[in-house]
Amino acid sequence: VPRWLAPGERNVGLRFQRLKAKLGDKSNASSEVEYQGAVGFLVGKLGRGVPTIIDMVNHTRLDCLLGSASLMQVSVAHAVHHASHRSAFGGVLAEKPLMANVLTDLALEAEGATALALRVASSFDDPAQEQFKRIATAIGKYYVCKRAPALVYEALECLGGNGYVEEFPLARFYRQAPLNAVWEGSGNVIVGDVFRAVKGNPATIEALAAEVKAVGHPAISKSFQNAVSTLQKGAADGTAEMQGRIIVEHLALVLEACAVVKSAPAAVRDAFITSRLGDGSGAPTRSAQFGTLPAPLVDPAIFARHRPNVPAPSA
Image (cartoon, rainbow, N blue to C red; front, side):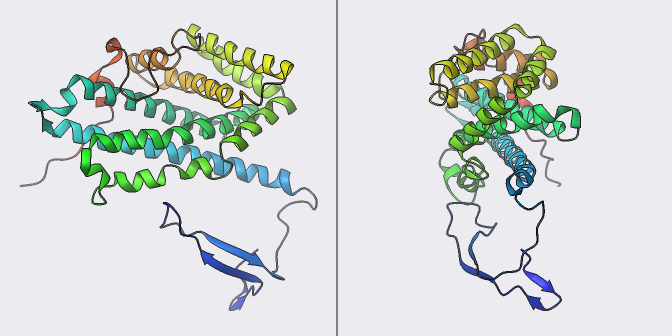
């Protein structure tokens, strides 16, 4: 439905009712539109609207996944930069054990989100990975977009009161963070889409299994099998939908771990798997809050990877 039909000729059937007053994303205007006799053109075959739009939706979901991962990365960078230069309580914040735990945990979360987002993006360039793309896009979009607000908040808190004021970017990041989880299918919609993909085409689960097998890590393999077993049991006793979120979350962590193994140094890989998957039994070694890693996993080298390389000011 074009805004203009020809040079100087408006499509007068488009009636813009208002611009929405949104929580965030204010620089990207959204409107409410009514179509009253507007001129439109088919972009697919008549009666095949949903299949036609699905491909567009998948690309937009990839945008959401990449956008949230990027927001997580830049938020961690701000937190690490601030903590590396701010001194309090007798020393540099980043060198304090509790802050080092928080920063390591935030860095691991961003590593997993970014590795998965890029892995999913690569599948869009390979027709042979169509089944992986179909299910991994939805899984990644669900989990990473939901993790972004919690991570951005924790990064904001690393700056103390400065993080909450508009002169610093974290306040805007925090308003922006929930958007991608809502866009192109909120949580329950995406979980339902994962289930439809699995039910309609078992090759999607086989594609995930192949990804796990290629990595060959015992804890990842065990976690994947546990998630599949929960899914199969739920399908048999009618509780699969009720457990949908935890199943998709487990699958997302498995895919993040696979991507991290292939892209990150050993210290990041080992800390990510241990803290997020444990031994694969479904019992991670951290609590729900950031900064609750076991002491052996806290490593300044992990969050140092996220420290911005800011050039010194010229004299």
